Image (cartoon, rainbow, N blue to C red; front, side, top):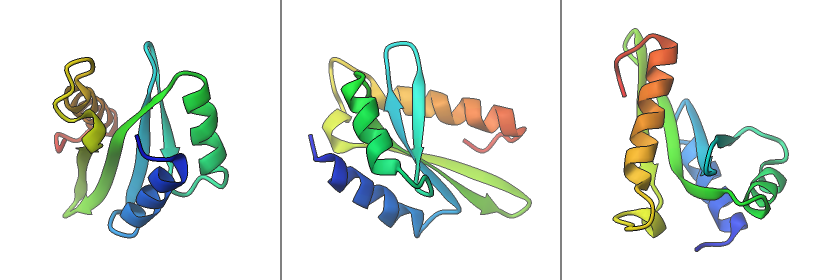
Length: 106
């Protein structure tokens, strides 16, 4: 797994390309989002990992016409993982976010 500063650098780089982007940190029964604009994003990520969280990928939102488009990207470390279906997890989160925003674009 990459270091937390490397993950934060990637989050910051992706933030330049999207209206909104956050890192998804999964726990057994919950999820937190480390947002690119969070002031203490590195400390938040370190705390989440120390508490047992797994940074699995990014969720991004972009303005698209009159709505929002949501996309996800699983970190390579968890693509095709037999122990954790990160791609399905991220897709499910994107669908929940789209539903809460009232849009079908996930």
